[in-house]
Length: 207
Image 1: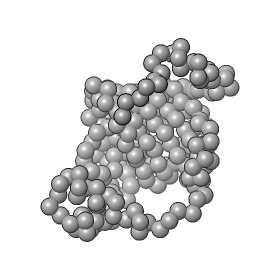
Image 2 (image 1 turned 120 degrees about the vertical axis):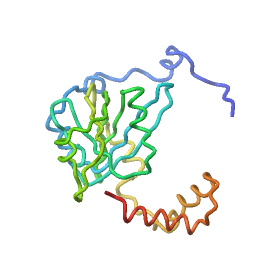
Image 3 (image 1 turned 90 degrees about the horizontal axis):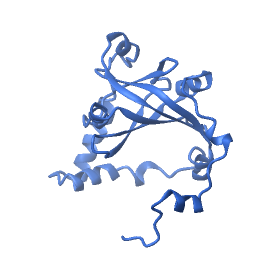
């Protein structure tokens, strides 16, 4: 679809969107204080945004028990690599372009924590052992060195009713991934066969 009314300059943008107030712009920080550490310790879910050398963006969800992401010092946190699909998009991107963005969520909490930093892939034994879960030590760890961060207001969570809405049963969504994988991958499998593979993988390969 081709759009006719596009904003292409900062001047055009500012005609529509005024600059943020100091109350918003001055809330950024560059070290992990007590509030940040508490939020990260309570979070079971983080989204990691990264880009490759050509600027193509990827966003990868990471999740485990609250506290699976550890803050090591005032400017460094570490994220363990749990079993997944072995695409390793984030790691490959970091090798080309180390800058990442993170969004932490806490179920039931209307605010989110947004961080930016430089990442590296590390294998220090003592770090990996600290991030072990169910007896499984991660092979790789994503270390992120904080540059800036801030807490994001809860309006999007409130509008979406994310944590309080009575969602429908999973049955309507149960086979969506299986259908998508069969179609997109042009697989010689039925949806039920693919669903069984996914279900077994989710039950037996979490750690």
